[in-house]
Image (cartoon, rainbow, N blue to C red):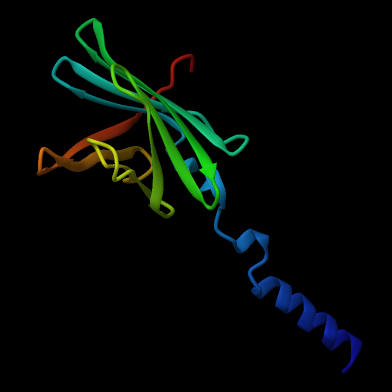
Length: 160
């Protein structure tokens, strides 16, 4: 073969062969779409979540539920790489900590699961466009299936 033809073949193979730019994000970067501030208000109750950008194989999230002028619940979450999965380590107010492991993840959604947990057994997030996010918890409580959804819209992060 002629050297020019070999160069053309090599360039085509590296371009079409799925170089680094064509690969899907790996690890914690798969959940980067959670980053930012999210809010839901119903009546006098406001639920807020804020997620830091992925860094060092981790994302940090925090949330609070405010009713009137009182914080009635809060939660701190560490989202971290655990092998080829993501672990959702929840630290909710008034409850023991629990770890849920990703069982499904793609460009716009992630489902975490811990079948040994009382309720919920699953925690999930789905991006519904650039400024909307649906979160839900689900599982069985006292033998009855239950699902609670939270429809969030993007909010301005404090200090911005």
